[in-house]
Image (tube, rainbow, N blue to C red):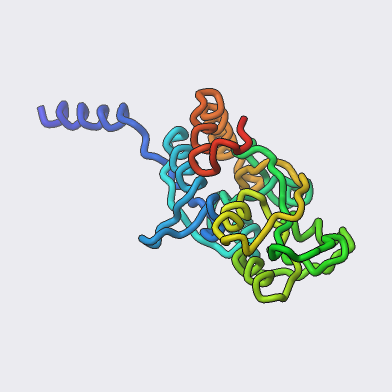
Length: 240
């Protein structure tokens, strides 16, 4: 009788749902509304909500890891986490080092922002940009003088304290800052560079990429991704 009971329990365990695989989600935590650290010292923002939903749909258990932007790709490659979900535009150069999922945010313009009233020629000015971004690469090739900073808030500070004539960054990051500046800052130009935003993964993690792509595609298909984009970026945001 005992053997029968044990066999029944064992069969039930085998038939039960598989335990979710743990996936470490690497983000910067300093680029609102994509990602930021809230008052509870937790990762928050569009990508936190998106990442948790993608993991739920893919039957994965998300663990969030915060990493500085300038080492975010090397630390993915070295195995400190399993994904990058940090407002990272898909580019050919990055794709040579890591792999990407499908886009979860469509291409959007980058903007130049300066102090209101300043007459700035962005082609010859001193322009601040975050290190390792597509914006920094664009400024470096434009004829302007590039000054790079490790974090995005430092680029804004550089304009305010006179270290730079303008900052060049994602418009989705800059616009809320401009709107909240009380006319201190103004948009002086915008340009479309780079592709959409995707999740970065190691080249060897094809199975994880497939799971995340399926989850992203399902959110596009049922409209929930567009709803999430509008929640965090406003009704005028680019959608799929």
